[in-house]
Amino acid sequence: MNGGAQAAFPPWLEGHLGQLIRLVGSGQTPSGLLVTGPKGVGKGALIRAFLQRMACTEAAEGLLGCGRCNGCRSFLGDTHPEILEVAPDTPGKEILVDSIRSVIEFLSLSHSGPVRSVFIEPAEAMNVNAANALLKTLEEPPGGAMILLAAAQPARLPATIRSRCRLLRVPVPQRALVRNWLTPFEQDELGADAALAACLDRPLEARALLDDEAAQAAWRSDRTALESLLHSQSPFPVVQRFLECDLTSLLPRLQRLLVSVQHYLIQGEMDAFARLFGSDLLGPFAATLGMRETAAVYQDSLQWQRELQAPLNPNLRCEDIVLRFWRRSEPA
Image 1 (cartoon, rainbow, N blue to C red):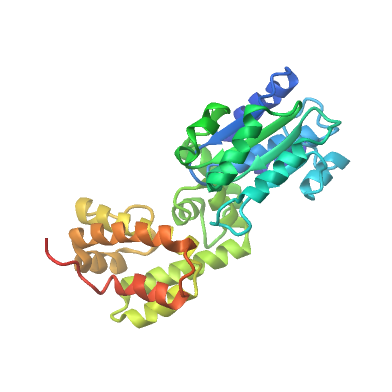
Image 2 (tube, rainbow, N blue to C red):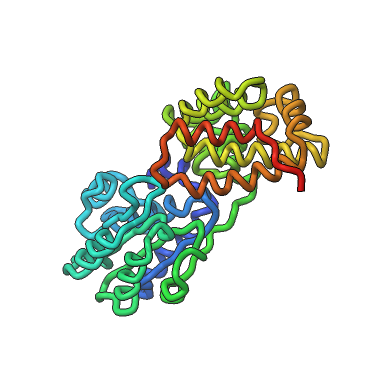
């Protein structure tokens, strides 16, 4: 077993991975497996580790693939002939029926290994036609086929699909376990606790933030935009900061900031996310916005998030979001 790979693999997933490996080894491979759990808990990491382990030709009794053999290299290079991954063409978009038709064709081919596998993530992104097409395959799966689905919102999947899959839940791990896992990757300017807070307590995203320059750049942009919102006396500089961000990452952090404001107004103390900005910024902002308006803006933010897929002008979208903080709801 590769020591570096073992250290990087989340320890709270090891038991689940061992369970899946034993299922295949005992000949009880399910034709459908649905892995559920909150965002960032490691559902995709678990499934990919399992698929690599199945592709590995030298793992023997090890938990993880060796990373060196032809099977591992082909998996890591996305060229393994018996493994297919399906995701939206663009993050946040739907998985269309054509993608599922390719799954059906792929599974109809013969296989030389223990199983021919398809991994769909996020499974809840399938539109109605795609889900219906997949259901037919789950009802009459080809021999030696395994369909693995990862979903943070499994309730969005049709009940008929959920009922035809073996369910594996990945719960939120203990914070101490996550922190111990992240500590070796800490940086001088960003520790494990700060990374977890910045990533909304999503362990895999916090790991990426500590190690990935693109994730760090996105966090710096989001943090600057939120700081601008907290201290600016005019909406126009804030709009410009928002335009420099990817709203798919900024909006969840904006929502988390509003939760922090509510916590501050009720408890009179800063939570972990609020401490990333400090009481000098958060306190006056919270006092100005007030509890009622904070709750109202939070509800509006849920609509903004639902509209992210809509083809709206970015300038108009950012202006609408930012100006909402300068508008006050009408009295009830």
